[in-house]
Amino acid sequence: MASVCERKENQQALLTIDIPVDDFRKALEAAYRKNARKFNIPGFRPGKAPMGIVTKFFGEGVLYEDAIDACIPDAYAAAVSEHSLDVVSRPEIDILEVGSAKGLRFTALVTLKPEVTLGTVLGVEAPKTEPSVTDEDLEREVQRVRERNARMVPVEDGEIQDGDTARIDYEGFLDGVPFEGGKGEGHDLRIGSNSFIPGFETQLLGHKAGETFDIQVTFPEEYHSEELKGRDAVFHVVVHTVTRRELPVLDDEFARDVSEHDTLDAYRAELRETLEKTARDRAVHAFEDAVVAAVTDAATVEIPSVMVEHETDHMVEDFEMRMRYQGLDMETYLKYIGQTMDEFRAGYADAARRRVKTSLVLESCAKELAVEASEEDVEEELVRSAGQYGMTRDQLVERLGGDTARVRDSVVTRKTIARLTEAAVPVPAGT
Image (cartoon, rainbow, N blue to C red):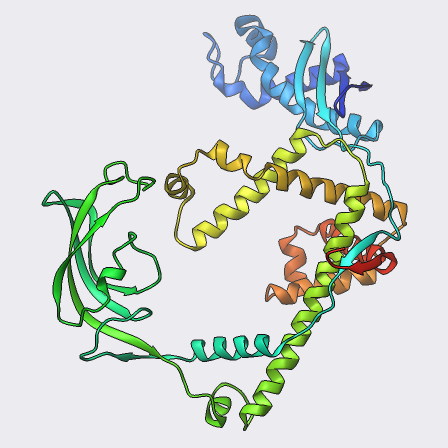
């Protein structure tokens, strides 16, 4: 096999690869053996016609597809290795010559990982916030804990108030005719959640359990259903029950219920310590992000569109997975927001480009600073990651197919960020 590499514009390279006649003939013979039983030729049982008879009867081209498919992958991989190319795209293959008397010649157009021109690497300035926890922060956290431990109590004869939950039956009508999707039974609606049509929840205020009444609403002009956009509707509503959140009293008993402390003061002290640690961790991560952003901004690189497309694919796939966890498919979500998939993907373009640039810059920084991951580093990361996923180290390696390269890259990236952060010059946030 022989190959020639021609560098093109836009981080592309064109490989011209030749498969010798003898090698291609072997591929043709393998293609013949693979497909022999498919050829029906008078005078021969299926699979018994010699290759020469088959090619004479059907033409040699009948074997080309399988022969070409057998030759290209290894030849392409060998050419990429020979010319030390760092490819970031699938090859665009074009067959130039093919035949038992010619061999196989093809080209492969690929996009290469771009070169990064680094700016300042060590010693960039980045904003750093000093962590602090105020009394107001502490009280908000105490209130959140109270909210989590609130109990729902029935409202026997009182009127519905904001924040109450009403269990209702409802049915919607347009000009006196029920419409599809406008009916529900036993629905728990928290007043103030804004989960229903504007104006619906507020018209429940003041009513009581056991009441039956009508509510008049107007669907928004941007509503997802064409039939209902801007239409006036009447909902017939039956209130079955009303419940109200009752917050626990803030006293020592509350502290004993939600913690291992005997007094409210001790519990508050623990909460403050937790909030302060969280604030310190958040400040550290924010400073790291600011340092990486500064180093990235100082670098220049022409990012191939294919890399942005690939990163957009990953981001959209992650979003789709989150939607599935919430029981919503992508097609339904797109209809709800009124966008096509192309429009939705376009919204990720800038973020995807930024991610790609950051990744390329950090990779270049690692090379510039000679950052490496030792075997001990990789082992520690494998154990740590396995614990996060609730599996053993060996199970994680098996899940990775035995390839720990991504784990090693992750360690190198983390160590690189640590080097950049240690050398960075913190400046007050907002300056």
